[in-house]
Length: 259
Image (cartoon, rainbow, N blue to C red; front, side, top):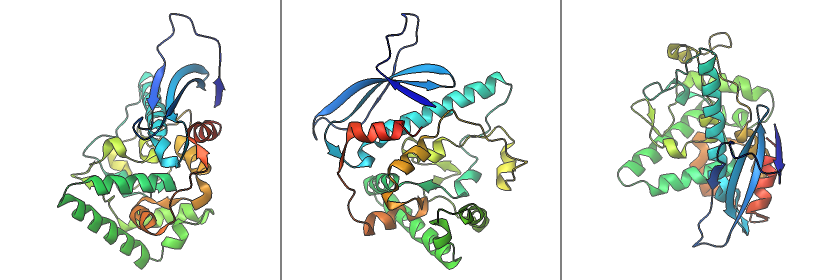
């Protein structure tokens, strides 16, 4: 996918620009701009607002969450036109037992979500995270899950067989849906929901997206490598603070350039 900034204005009949924003004006000045992304051969205009000064990648994350959701929505629309129905919905939480790779910025954002939860729910979620980390360690999978080699994909199957539910799973549905990781937003299937309980390459009809914001963010934030979602709290508690060596527009340009 290409991204193009500063293209000529589109005709009056063109759809309105997609608006995505990140940052809090009370915390510092914001920078706004217009970008056109070519998605599936179609130019899509965006109006984006991000922190103007040096920030951590997680401060720009709402932009990338919006992009991931938009890519998923467009994929679902294309599937419907082809007569394929997306089977993902609340109550079907099989994919919430898969390995979910996240960037360091996402780990810190999820840790914030946990800290914002009221008691006693926060303690319950923290206990689920701790139990998941222990299960991964007992299975000897942690080193394999953080290794960016081909073995990671085999380890993903081993992880799924452990049956570890996402700590945020409630009644087979995501309890933090607006704040869910990028890779969760981008995972949609048009195969029968029951196939996800024993996934195979032949049995899963995964929708193809026009772009991959989750991978773009990971590559832009690779100084800490990737990690499984269940290690988010451990990472947040033990890793050094996020570097503040890029401005919001610089982070945005880096990620968009990798889509």
